[in-house]
Image 1 (tube, rainbow, N blue to C red):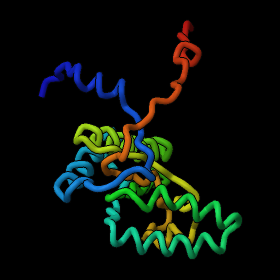
Image 2 (cartoon, rainbow, N blue to C red):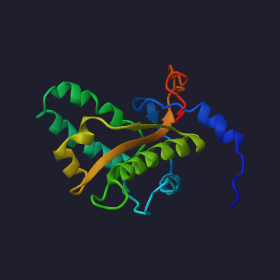
Image 3 (cartoon, rainbow, N blue to C red):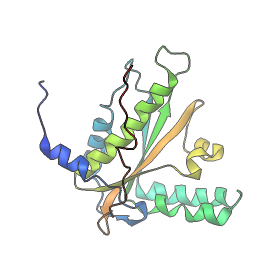
Length: 191
Protein backbone atom coordinates (compact mmCIF):
# COMPACT_ATOMS: atom_id res chain seq x y z
CA UNK A 1 0.00 0.00 0.00
CA UNK A 2 1.50 3.38 -0.95
CA UNK A 3 2.21 6.06 1.63
CA UNK A 4 -0.39 8.83 1.36
CA UNK A 5 -0.23 12.29 2.93
CA UNK A 6 -2.78 12.75 5.72
CA UNK A 7 -3.03 16.40 6.84
CA UNK A 8 -5.93 15.63 9.19
CA UNK A 9 -3.70 13.17 11.09
CA UNK A 10 -1.04 15.87 11.40
CA UNK A 11 -3.66 18.27 12.73
CA UNK A 12 -4.85 15.68 15.23
CA UNK A 13 -1.29 15.05 16.45
CA UNK A 14 -0.71 18.79 16.80
CA UNK A 15 -3.76 19.03 19.10
CA UNK A 16 -3.18 15.78 21.05
CA UNK A 17 -3.78 16.11 24.80
CA UNK A 18 -4.31 13.62 27.57
CA UNK A 19 -7.67 13.74 29.30
CA UNK A 20 -7.45 13.54 33.10
CA UNK A 21 -8.12 9.90 33.98
CA UNK A 22 -10.32 10.92 36.94
CA UNK A 23 -12.58 12.80 34.51
CA UNK A 24 -13.27 9.94 32.09
CA UNK A 25 -16.83 8.60 32.21
CA UNK A 26 -19.23 6.50 30.12
CA UNK A 27 -19.72 6.09 27.33
CA UNK A 28 -16.46 4.36 26.66
CA UNK A 29 -15.45 2.21 23.74
CA UNK A 30 -17.58 -0.86 23.10
CA UNK A 31 -16.04 -4.32 22.69
CA UNK A 32 -15.42 -3.87 18.96
CA UNK A 33 -13.74 -0.50 19.53
CA UNK A 34 -11.57 -1.96 22.31
CA UNK A 35 -10.53 -4.70 19.90
CA UNK A 36 -9.69 -2.02 17.31
CA UNK A 37 -7.62 -0.09 19.87
CA UNK A 38 -5.61 -3.24 20.55
CA UNK A 39 -5.34 -4.12 16.86
CA UNK A 40 -4.05 -0.64 16.05
CA UNK A 41 -1.69 -0.65 19.03
CA UNK A 42 -0.19 -3.91 17.81
CA UNK A 43 0.83 -2.27 14.50
CA UNK A 44 3.77 -0.42 16.10
CA UNK A 45 7.39 -0.94 15.08
CA UNK A 46 8.53 -4.27 16.47
CA UNK A 47 12.05 -5.20 15.48
CA UNK A 48 12.29 -8.94 15.12
CA UNK A 49 8.51 -9.47 15.07
CA UNK A 50 8.61 -10.41 18.75
CA UNK A 51 5.35 -8.79 19.87
CA UNK A 52 7.09 -7.93 23.17
CA UNK A 53 3.83 -6.88 24.78
CA UNK A 54 0.39 -8.20 25.63
CA UNK A 55 -2.94 -6.72 26.72
CA UNK A 56 -5.25 -7.12 29.71
CA UNK A 57 -8.71 -5.52 29.40
CA UNK A 58 -10.13 -4.28 32.71
CA UNK A 59 -13.87 -3.66 32.45
CA UNK A 60 -15.89 -1.76 35.09
CA UNK A 61 -16.96 -4.63 37.38
CA UNK A 62 -13.50 -6.15 37.39
CA UNK A 63 -11.98 -2.71 37.91
CA UNK A 64 -14.09 -2.17 41.03
CA UNK A 65 -12.72 -5.43 42.45
CA UNK A 66 -9.18 -4.46 41.42
CA UNK A 67 -9.40 -1.04 43.06
CA UNK A 68 -10.72 -2.65 46.28
CA UNK A 69 -7.75 -5.03 46.31
CA UNK A 70 -5.34 -2.17 45.58
CA UNK A 71 -6.76 -0.21 48.53
CA UNK A 72 -5.97 -3.21 50.75
CA UNK A 73 -2.41 -3.32 49.40
CA UNK A 74 -1.99 0.46 49.72
CA UNK A 75 -2.96 0.25 53.40
CA UNK A 76 0.15 -1.90 53.98
CA UNK A 77 2.56 0.44 52.15
CA UNK A 78 4.34 3.63 53.15
CA UNK A 79 2.14 6.70 52.72
CA UNK A 80 -1.05 4.63 52.45
CA UNK A 81 -3.37 7.62 52.13
CA UNK A 82 -1.39 9.05 49.22
CA UNK A 83 -1.30 5.68 47.49
CA UNK A 84 -5.04 5.14 48.02
CA UNK A 85 -5.80 8.62 46.62
CA UNK A 86 -3.91 7.79 43.43
CA UNK A 87 -6.37 4.98 42.73
CA UNK A 88 -8.89 7.59 41.54
CA UNK A 89 -6.97 7.64 38.26
CA UNK A 90 -7.78 3.98 37.81
CA UNK A 91 -11.31 3.89 39.21
CA UNK A 92 -13.37 6.11 36.90
CA UNK A 93 -12.65 5.36 33.24
CA UNK A 94 -15.20 2.97 31.70
CA UNK A 95 -12.42 0.90 30.11
CA UNK A 96 -8.80 0.42 31.06
CA UNK A 97 -6.37 -1.62 29.04
CA UNK A 98 -3.19 -2.78 30.72
CA UNK A 99 -0.27 -2.96 28.32
CA UNK A 100 2.29 -5.46 29.59
CA UNK A 101 5.88 -5.27 28.37
CA UNK A 102 7.37 -8.72 28.00
CA UNK A 103 10.95 -8.38 26.90
CA UNK A 104 13.05 -11.37 25.96
CA UNK A 105 16.54 -11.14 27.47
CA UNK A 106 19.40 -12.37 25.32
CA UNK A 107 17.52 -11.89 22.05
CA UNK A 108 19.33 -10.20 19.17
CA UNK A 109 16.84 -7.32 19.51
CA UNK A 110 18.04 -5.39 22.59
CA UNK A 111 15.67 -5.36 25.57
CA UNK A 112 15.57 -1.54 25.41
CA UNK A 113 14.11 -1.68 21.87
CA UNK A 114 11.57 -4.28 22.98
CA UNK A 115 10.48 -2.02 25.87
CA UNK A 116 10.29 0.97 23.52
CA UNK A 117 7.94 -1.04 21.32
CA UNK A 118 5.59 -1.51 24.30
CA UNK A 119 5.71 2.26 24.90
CA UNK A 120 4.85 2.82 21.25
CA UNK A 121 1.81 0.54 21.73
CA UNK A 122 0.62 2.77 24.57
CA UNK A 123 1.04 5.97 22.57
CA UNK A 124 -0.61 4.53 19.48
CA UNK A 125 -3.61 3.41 21.53
CA UNK A 126 -4.06 6.93 22.97
CA UNK A 127 -3.95 8.39 19.45
CA UNK A 128 -6.42 5.78 18.19
CA UNK A 129 -8.78 6.50 21.11
CA UNK A 130 -8.76 10.20 20.18
CA UNK A 131 -9.47 9.31 16.55
CA UNK A 132 -12.51 7.37 17.79
CA UNK A 133 -13.71 10.45 19.68
CA UNK A 134 -12.73 9.36 23.18
CA UNK A 135 -10.49 10.88 25.78
CA UNK A 136 -7.64 8.77 27.05
CA UNK A 137 -4.76 8.77 29.49
CA UNK A 138 -1.65 6.59 29.68
CA UNK A 139 -0.69 6.13 33.30
CA UNK A 140 1.69 4.21 35.46
CA UNK A 141 1.66 4.81 39.20
CA UNK A 142 2.85 3.03 42.32
CA UNK A 143 0.67 0.02 41.55
CA UNK A 144 2.44 -0.48 38.22
CA UNK A 145 5.70 -1.20 40.08
CA UNK A 146 4.49 -3.00 43.19
CA UNK A 147 5.42 -6.71 43.06
CA UNK A 148 2.29 -7.84 44.90
CA UNK A 149 0.13 -5.90 42.45
CA UNK A 150 2.05 -7.28 39.49
CA UNK A 151 1.24 -10.78 40.74
CA UNK A 152 -2.41 -9.79 41.28
CA UNK A 153 -2.55 -8.57 37.66
CA UNK A 154 -1.18 -11.88 36.40
CA UNK A 155 2.21 -10.63 35.25
CA UNK A 156 4.75 -13.36 34.73
CA UNK A 157 8.46 -13.36 35.53
CA UNK A 158 10.21 -10.75 33.36
CA UNK A 159 7.02 -8.83 32.55
CA UNK A 160 6.47 -5.21 33.55
CA UNK A 161 3.66 -2.70 33.23
CA UNK A 162 4.16 -0.43 30.21
CA UNK A 163 1.01 1.47 31.11
CA UNK A 164 -2.66 1.53 31.91
CA UNK A 165 -4.55 3.09 28.99
CA UNK A 166 -7.76 4.60 30.37
CA UNK A 167 -10.43 5.41 27.80
CA UNK A 168 -13.80 7.13 28.09
CA UNK A 169 -15.66 10.37 27.51
CA UNK A 170 -14.06 13.39 29.20
CA UNK A 171 -16.38 15.32 31.51
CA UNK A 172 -14.62 18.48 30.31
CA UNK A 173 -12.24 19.25 27.45
CA UNK A 174 -8.60 18.41 28.25
CA UNK A 175 -6.53 21.47 29.09
CA UNK A 176 -3.57 22.52 27.01
CA UNK A 177 -0.26 22.59 28.86
CA UNK A 178 3.10 24.18 28.25
CA UNK A 179 5.04 22.19 25.69
CA UNK A 180 8.82 21.78 25.50
CA UNK A 181 10.87 24.31 23.55
CA UNK A 182 11.95 22.04 20.71
CA UNK A 183 14.61 24.51 19.54
CA UNK A 184 16.41 24.10 22.89
CA UNK A 185 16.17 20.31 22.56
CA UNK A 186 17.32 20.04 18.95
CA UNK A 187 20.84 20.11 17.54
CA UNK A 188 22.55 19.12 14.31
CA UNK A 189 25.39 16.64 14.20
CA UNK A 190 28.14 18.03 12.05
CA UNK A 191 30.76 15.35 12.24
